[in-house]
Length: 322
Image (cartoon, rainbow, N blue to C red):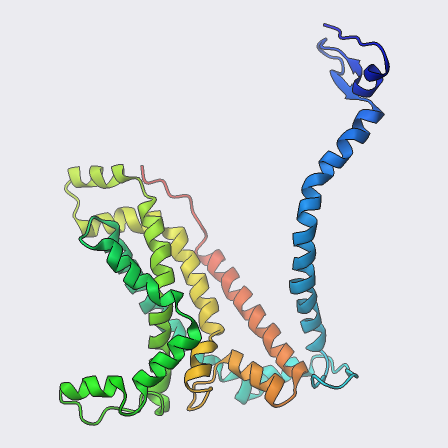
């Protein structure tokens, strides 16, 4: 079939139109391409503002961070002297700096408790339970509270003669430990506060993933006589494996970058200083912005490396539960 047209419109729309097999079907004319050109640019124009803000507010400061890490800038002086890799060498050789990574182990261990409790409650409340909406709200509520407010609440809870000591005295504990003053206990107290603060986020992730599993799987498992525990290991855990992996990555990143709770409750005293607190004190208290920038870059590389290792060791696999 051949289509013909007369007049100027014919030149703007179709130069050659043919449906014969083996021949070019449609070829827009130059004027048609010019008319389509602004339309093709529309998606890029919508993206331009967002990408521009992302480059300006995220990647440009990150590029400056890398540059500062190779200088001895104090944050105030106009001159910045290049010092090469001296800041990075100091990060890895100064025990005062690198040893604070040991504090992150408390939060890393606590994150497993946090994910275990969140998975436990999410599994129970995914089934029909009385007052399940009330319990869901109670478990998620701490995550909605500002971290500064949580820090002050638990500061009064753990202080000598505070709420926790009063409750323990009802059970005959007359000499409670210094929850925030003893270096052997302070980090566990702060890690426990972090568990209370962030368990709600893991709970919501696990609950949404469990509820997305097909209900027919549970019905088939019950017909086969599977117990709740067997359903959990055969249906729930394989079905939410990706969410568990995501939570694990977030736990690693969170344990390495803990800041607000120890900063508010102890200010990094009594052996509770984390790497982020140490970085901020280096930058603003000791006026070593170059060294602090190198510490931030090292933290970023460690988080990326651990995430890459986790993805290599435990890759996402397509799970077929049918």
